[in-house]
Image (tube, rainbow, N blue to C red; front, side):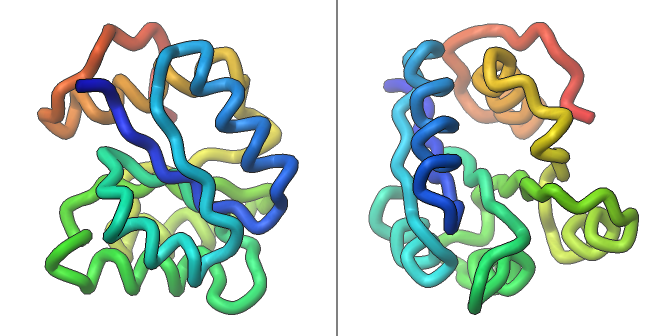
Length: 137
């Protein structure tokens, strides 16, 4: 069985762009447009990993992270936070609340997205379909 990724992003076009990038690595993905939908899909889609934007209207990505990590049904899912912000505070806050990693959108090469996800899942001890070629930070 392949990797399942839930993308939580309030900008539909950005979310679709991530989905297309993951298709090239044969990674199954589901897009949740906004935090509320993302929280629900984290339970129904049962992803191996979640990519979540921080800057979203209510609830924002930090609130989504909190909610998913506090729910015993979803608390074990690794969550990577995406943002356009470069503030160290956001990274520290996300990591302190249980995020697995923190990626800057502007520094993220879509061609390497699948490899980065596979690397995190390997580090988490999850089954992966391949070996990553890129660092996760």
